Image (cartoon, rainbow, N blue to C red; front, side, top):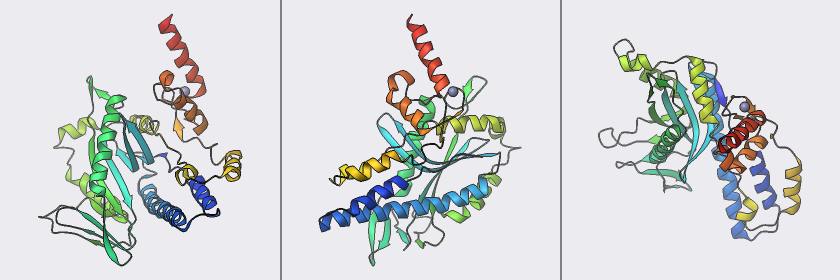
Length: 309
Ligand SMILES: [Zn+2]
């Protein structure tokens, strides 16, 4: 089941294209062009991976799929590309990377990406994903999301994978030196996960079998996680110091996919539009940083007033 698709970055692309039409210094133009290229490249990698994931897991009641999840917890932020959760609460945290010209992983786990005819050091996606998992773990605890069995919250099992585009070339160290088995091509994700699941024999593994939940519980947990999504809008004009009054106002008047309902009400799970979600976030102290539909917003306010009176 697909719980959340990727947010559209159409308006970000349009804004950057608009900035490029302005009179810019050559340095600034290069910066904006680089930003736009990186956005498009990342976009393509994520889209390709999302297609494969939806194809393999989107129709299964045993799996919940969440794309493009931005979490905030205690000042820490995690931008998770894809999340896959099964009915045993194995949570696969997936980071998709698009290194078209190849990547080399060193003996100590350092990452080098190939571009402009040489290798350049880049932050390790493995470490990046480790930090994402920490934020996700904290969020699950803070919001008490995991269902309980015999009064005890079920403990999910986190698995980290880096998805490389199918065409990219990966040079790895020997396994004894540095284990890179979590860095895989996006098109073998299904096979890799099947192998992991096969290894866990549910008949001998009592803890696993007691953890299996129904697909409605899985959906409930996944929708709660998706409701924690906190997207940010990049203000590129401000970042690049460009004045874009005309472009900005037309952007604003055009409802770019704001009618879609990518969020879920914390209380009743009904679908909620971006506008309603943003309204709730702007009253954090009332809604505790959660998203509620209009009907449930009233309930929350009434409950608060009731407590006070
Ligand atoms: Zn509601």
